[in-house]
Image 1 (cartoon, rainbow over the protein chains, first blue to last red):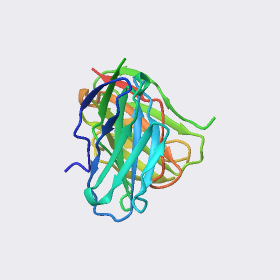
Image 2 (cartoon, rainbow over the protein chains, first blue to last red):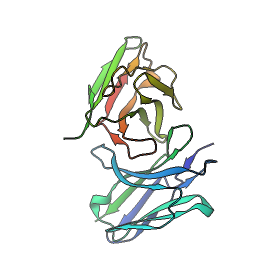
Image 3 (cartoon, chains in turn orange, purple):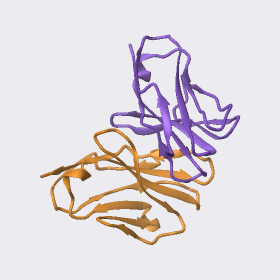
Length: 114
Length: 112
């Protein structure tokens, strides 16, 4: 079974719209870490955020915000007032305290139309 | 500059011809990892290493080998490449388990 599910394969929005990228994870560990990475068309992987399982506070960084809900095993990512530069593939990932492996979702390709 | 480097960046080879993709980091990180990225499958972990001489299989280790003789280097070895190993490969390092991973620029491998 997938440890990290990103059900949205592709999303298109018009510039300045808000968009939320969904991420659902599965783990039996009580200690784990969640991540979001951005992969722009140039191909590199850019770290966006890391959360540990004990910190459910939502986080805001500029136009980006993250909503972590353990009750629904979700770690969703919202971009407010989207811009063309936000066009990229976004990956959600999970690292469990036991096992030391890293699991990525299949990614959501976001296109922001000017 | 803190970075993860991979070489080569692009490689076209033929089935069965052994190859090595090098990975090096200058951040003194203990944790290093290899991933392959395929369309529709995201990134999948091939092997990872917690420290020198300590390596473990990820989700897709078949057909790959790794070694960790020095802390900074973590080469990926394909002893007999096959066309289904055509992929984009990323090396990554992290200062701690569960920590932010720093990724290399990627190596695009084509096996004919």
